[in-house]
Image 1 (cartoon, rainbow, N blue to C red):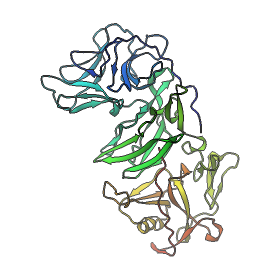
Image 2 (image 1 turned 90 degrees about the vertical axis):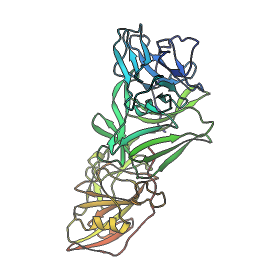
Image 3 (image 1 turned 60 degrees about the vertical axis):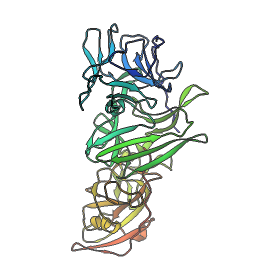
Image 4 (image 1 turned 45 degrees about the horizontal axis):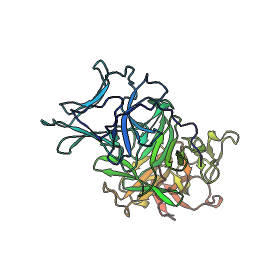
Length: 453
């Protein structure tokens, strides 16, 4: 498993006073040198500098580990404080939380967009989950830090990825090891589809971890020695789409990090070595976006090798990124065959067709000469939240891009123009004539859940 190198930050450890409660009120603003400590002592919130000087000061949250400061959230990441005198974070009488500099200018603000607070105002609380919550006296939450993540997802919290089918929040990496400002890499839901998650390098896709289903999906469990430390889920609540992961009781501190190099890592704290260890990391080798070119796929089990589906061959054996080409051209109106590729992460740029059975999904593709492939998921056992018990995806056009063969994936059916006798995986035979489809053999292999994030 790949290791994460060179990501140990040097932080200025500021002196702090005896007072260390978990709440911020109108009467108790926070200034450099003071901290909030969550009730169970898991997290701290205060001011920090990521270098050996205090010329750039940030408000952040970190794990409260003696002698080590791992920042998991930064408020003013793109607006550092240069003059540290008379800086304070306060809750205003209008139930907003504001970071002021020494000249009274607003550096950062958490805005109450819901309602007025009444005579006693709001209170900000740092929770043991690492969430910093601004709430009213009646416990109504009007702002929380987990809705505005930086580069880290913490366990047992919900990260809102989209709201009403629109992108809501993204993880955004630091610019460098000592620079919390907005970096080049980000992670979030695909703006063109609520069914897949991307890591972006600027505006370009860098990696596409998975295609999800409109159900509560368990994405897998990771282990540290013999202790299970993580199970992850993607799920809908009404018109909101969330990602979350949970850790088992007694597990070490855990975090998911998108670092400044574009690596998405699951890390856990090792109490013996007093350091963070990498439990899982992506991307790896040829699973970078489209690295195997059109119609090529990355075979994770075969040492991250680019391969071609049956019925295809490499365009250039010296340059695998050129992808694959058909051995035999397709001809509309002639016999067409579909080769079955099991355990696949399906390609990008699909069309989602709702409320279809497997046969109807296959028919959608086989009747259309421009359809290159289809994939089907039966969601009836999981219970779709949106009422659709299936998920039919079809691909039209010239290319299939960014495919990967891995476990916990699904079947992909690719259209061929060759004789079934020359293929090496199950196929079903389709005769196309005047838009009438005759299905002679249908291979319906059980659906496997999507690969973990």
